Length: 268
Image 1: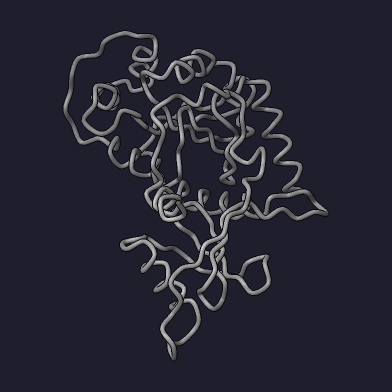
Image 2: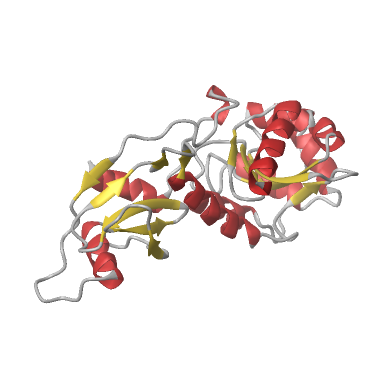
């Protein structure tokens, strides 16, 4: 069971359904119950430390991509990044904890904050060569949205793009065709990117209009791979500049309220 769970973290497998089932839900709305497992301990006499932790995790899940290992809020444990997810491994490389660590005084998910920072760093590397931007005339906030041309709630969100912009929210779109690379939705994304006017093409495609099939150098595969690394579980997936996932579809006024709340927390 834990092996499958770790594999799902490592591969960041995505669901094929829209995140519309809970359109305003937040990734960190409720803490996951913690689970524990025992990775293979380092051989007797082996150095115990971060390398021992890497060795133990690789023995548990061969080929696992392990990121940074850092201090954790749990005494005796190290924080380990798997893509944009975080797990905790004991310093002796014997025990593994999976779940949300909540600071009681602040009621803040320390795990959620750590994962948001990982997402922030991943998304910070995305440039204009990978996104389509609908910029606010008077920008207050910027969000990154992974979108699928055929997702119903993605279309609903885009139908309100003028209102997001009016409220000062700039939207950077990245492509995430949920059906996968080479699918019909993937080709629709490529068609949009290859168009002379990408904003108009995206708007037309989300309105159900067929675009001429095209073939050019596009970022669709790169965007899709990034979405898997970030840990996408549906579309639309909306991230604030600090990496916090705001939910699936979030109405304009509610999104502004969430962004203002985040900004207030950061200012304190």
